[in-house]
Image (cartoon, rainbow, N blue to C red; front, top):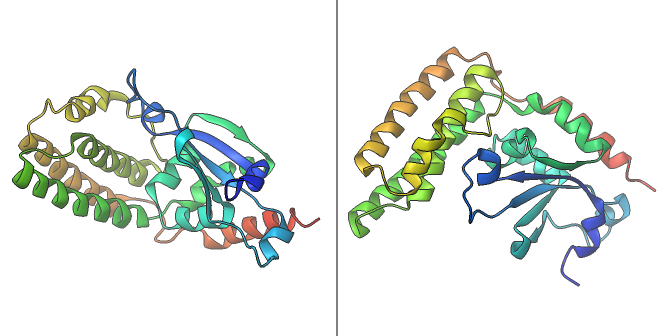
Length: 226
């Protein structure tokens, strides 16, 4: 039996993320499922412990242990925040529904540092690819631009946009290598300026609501005491 297979019955949330959630899917796109599991208290307390995540690469699935998921969300991890805001939810048990109802508690100005720092570091690597191979990884470039577009909306509106909407065709053109690298990089720099301006004007708090999230985690884990 695969490691963690016995914990799969304790999955409390399953959703679809990635290209299908973004509205960037094409005929050959995979279906990426992510979610959360809440282990029984006895298993959590035992010497065996619990894995931070359950993975099935073949099925394109990954489920985080609830505490791990919440810690990542508080740090404004983009992949985790998208799980909370994706429109494609396949299953949500009562604890997960409570979590979704309080998802705004995770949003803070940390979004700017997390998103901007990641995009900057990755664009430097793409620029190196251009110098050494003549072109970047276009799909990665597309997703980095998408992250900046999302970050701007988060700071301005206090929600995480998952579907790319009006930007779909331009983003797909980037993925297909139909946009010159110089134009992609210029778009990225313009979005950074918008992102910085959005930070100065945002009404999001400096820190996420850690107390509310911690109280939720304690309630959820207490519910698993047999």
